[in-house]
Amino acid sequence: MLLLIYLSSGLFLAWSLGANNAANVFGPAVSTKMVKFRTAALLTSFFVIIGAVYEGAGASQTLGKLGSVDALGGAFTVALAAAITVAGMTKMGLPVSTSQAIVGGIIGWNFFSGSLTDFSALSKIFGTWVICPILAAIFSFIFYKFYLYFIVRSKVHLLRIDAYTRFFYLAVTAFGAYSLGANNIANAMGVFVPAAPFHDISLAGIDLSGTQVLFLIGSIAIGFGVITYSHNVIRTVGNDLFRLSSVGGLIVILAEAWVLFIFGSQSLHDWMLAHHLPAFPLVPVSSSQAVVGGVIGIAVAKGGRNIQFRVLGRISMGWITTPVIACIITFVLLFFVQNVFDQKVHNETIYDFGNPVIRELSTHEIDYEKIEPLKGATFKNARALHAYLSNVDQYTQPEKELIMLYGALDPIEITPAKFKLISYKNLNESQISALEKMIGRKFRYRWQFEQALADECDSWNARSKDKGKKDEIRQRIDYIVNHFRVD
Image (cartoon, rainbow, N blue to C red; front, side, top):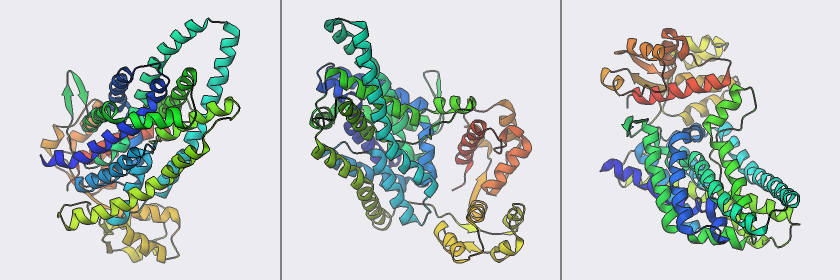
């Protein structure tokens, strides 16, 4: 019951995502009367679930780097604040971004807990917020021009074109829903991943990790939001911003689906890296921004006339204010949840610079004279340590990052009971054997555990020069650490 209460805010946010953002997948289809609302909603709900379960883990990692909400009470509060923000914007008929709401919520949690915001991850996310609508507009423009070229050359009868359009609406809606689930499930349930409330299970012969179970529950809530409360946003995107034809609506959905897919698909990301191609970062982007960018692309392709700039301005203001509002609401709610309801909203990460840490840092080309003042020092959280390092001019930025990485206490214990609950589907035999040999061992620091793993088995070594292989090993280590971490 307590777990259900904690997850309720994430489910509320997932429902809000379905009510607000999932309408972007089929809003043009419904507003142009090419597909019935019920058909589009059911199709979208089904493929959102598939995409969330099988591809949702990639984008959630970037949010984890921005801020690791490590207590269920904190995850509940962050998700609740984001859900309140999104639901309020939805009530006003504005297609806001759950991505921006959850990012604002995580930053609010970072401020409250004394955690540091990873500005490299934040800049990556901000960059995608700029690129997302532009890329969607470019795709939409190109697709529309290609469509016109095809129609002129093929001379297909209008009735045949109408039939083809209806069929492609269903196919593109399914693709868009799959991409939405893969990319945006991290917005609703990603903050719960570090607290790992579920174990791995087997469902109807399909092995699901604890994270996939979490995403399955969240995606069902998204589907419920699609079916029950997505009409208002359909009207804003499909009619108010720019009057779309049936073909225009199809192209907008297709452009949005591709943008969500390339920023959310772990399999596409890994395939591109394996073939030495540049890959887009796995970041939860805004489907609202993508669909608005797609609409603008169509409008520009038609000469830029009849764009309702006042509506576009309202939407843009919603994008700007969403993270700020979510951040403020999160900070206030965290205070009440911790001090009024006496719930744990974060775990203090203590930094302890004992002899093992000092010895390890000395192997990383940091002058001992810089390390020596830290010997025996303890800091209550990341912000306190960062403040100390910032007040000392001798440390470079890479040295600060190493010091914070190796000094963080992160107790890990390999117990027989937890070992039996490991999901083996992503681990090879040598990796499992290496873990089995470590049963009964304890570690104070994560880096000690990672080194011990690499010593036992080279396939646990995350220092590979192959980025795709390195990312894969890092994901497996994250899973193992979360599994064996001691509270």
